[in-house]
Amino acid sequence: MPRVLALLCLILLCAAAATPIAGPPGWTGFTPGGTGTVAAFRWPEPDGSFRHTLGVTVTTTASTLDEFIDRNTKLLQGAEYYRVEANAKTQACGQPAWHLAYSHPGLTEATKDFTVFTEQIVTVRRGRLVIATYIHTSRDPPRADAENWIGRVCGLN
Picture 1 (spheres, rainbow, N blue to C red):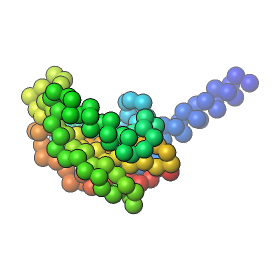
Picture 2: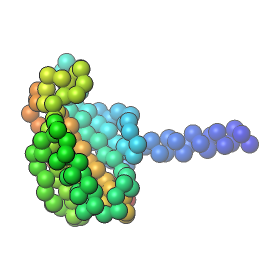
Picture 3: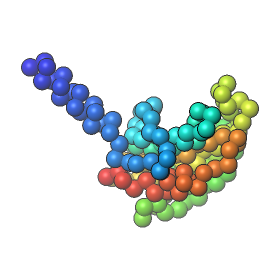
């Protein structure tokens, strides 16, 4: 019986790790970190670095899109180093969504000489927040495929 339970747990873990979301062509998937992250991709640079990342997080931290927008707008407005670049309600996958873009100085040794840009599209599907995120540094211009991708993450049921 313990072997059956161990095998069942392994199958469930593998199924949970599988992502129903494909990244843009040419992007490399990697094991996501963070609670609720269901997909993560990075663009491989010729020098081996990854200066562009994409991710999708699913969470239930707010009951409505408006609640999430209100709470996170207040957080960003009160944050000393963050600069909001875009903040607007929009549509994504035929659903109401929030488009948020903000920047801040790099906070790690690897990014201390750069500005880090984060762009997100947030929707609510089946009572869960779906947050598609694109992060890149000021070292490189934004990638159109990444910006388009975050607005088209519709594969979650």
